Image 1: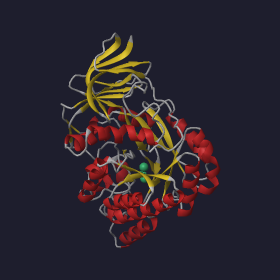
Image 2: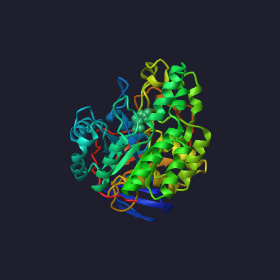
Image 3: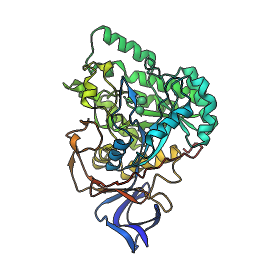
Image 4: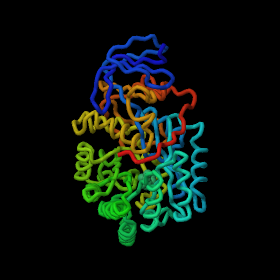
Amino acid sequence: MFDLLIKNGNVVTPAGTRRMQVAVLDGKIHALEAELTGPARKTIDAAGKLVFPGFIDAHTHMGIPIMNTFSVDDFESGSVAAACGGVTTIVDFTVQEPGQSLHESVATRLEKAGGKCHVDYALHVNVTDQAEARLPEIPQLIEDGFRAFKVFSTYRQAGMMVTWAQFRQVLQTVDAHGGLLCLHAEDNDLVEQETARHISSGDLAAIFHPRSRTAEAEARAIARAAEIARELDAALYIVHLSSRAGLEAALEARARGSKLFLETCPQYLVLTEECYLRKDGHLWITTPPLRREEDVEALWQALADGSIDVVATDHCPFTVAQKDAGGGVFHQTPNGLPGVETLFPLLYTFGVAQGRISLSRLVQVLAGNPARIFGLSPHKGGISKGLDADLVIWDPEQTVEIKAEQLHGKADWSPYSGLTVSGRVDYTILRGQVLVEEGRFRGESVVGQLLRAQKGEQR
Ligand code: URP
Ligand code: ZN
Ligand code: ZN
């Protein structure tokens, strides 16, 4: 007797899409066959639907401090939103308070997620304070299953930046012990110079956000970091790539031998800096900023040809009131956008339905690649026998307009309101348990578990 049988769906894997029956037992995919009959405790007829692996959002920030406030989703609300969008695993980031050890920062974050998170979760470890003093902690954290670390080459005034010398030390240590370093790449000198220039001219409107945090700043930081990575022969993961210049810097570095993983986000694939010209344009302030149409096209191209490895959201939502508290001034508005619930619907609509990427690419960048890169692949990232039964059933016949009030996070607006997506998440299933049924969240008890990563680089 199976626990669950999903019948007649079109199952999407990197190898292609085929009509298959999926049987689930004890939270795992037990069988995957062209023909299978029950009995099963629960049967879902997925005829005419697409069956995807549960998606992984490898970049979220639940309840983090930014500019005297906190991103508004906690692990509870953010994970309900995730499940409703077909995301069954999130990878969030620790917050290292000044003076805090990395181990303490992990413990604090685990405390916040434990018993609250409806989807499975892993953690990347931020190194923002006293990097040199924290190096000895890194090997044990990797041993404990926290293998990805993150540093920022900017946010000096917020006390989060590492110097390039510190970057080199952290990268060397993380890589030597089988971990992976992630980088928020912006050249801080250029950002501070351009920000100061605009402030002193009284140019404070939202459009001066992209004018201050330029594509050139992204490209410079990527080039510098990639060169250090090449010298150390260490892999490096670039988060939220936003621009054509940044992409070109990364591709040039790869051609010279740097081992780079590249991540971009839906906001850089679907929106442009035109949003900042709206009356309420400050709502869209996120870092790096939204860019131009030519950047959007370059990122899609790189996604299609395999140059970009992962799409994740950088989910970091604020309410309108939180955003407004900055008075519309670009550098005083808390930066970040909601995104976890719209990640897959947007990538399907603007990628697959509009012919820019294949279904196979979609499951690679939203499931297979993040699972492999972050050491989750023994259990996550695909639909095959023995993997966790994390599954999403998508009805491509529906068309749904995105409305903030119908999303499940705590933000009272969405950057994507008014866009129409080509389908609906009918079911989200986590380790065989139904979290979303016929489009409605059903998670009665909290079942999300902490995931510990496997060591070793997996290109
Ligand atoms: O503006 C953003 N993206 N806020 C979250 C922090 C970060 O830089 O990823
Ligand atoms: Zn960032
Ligand atoms: Zn982020």
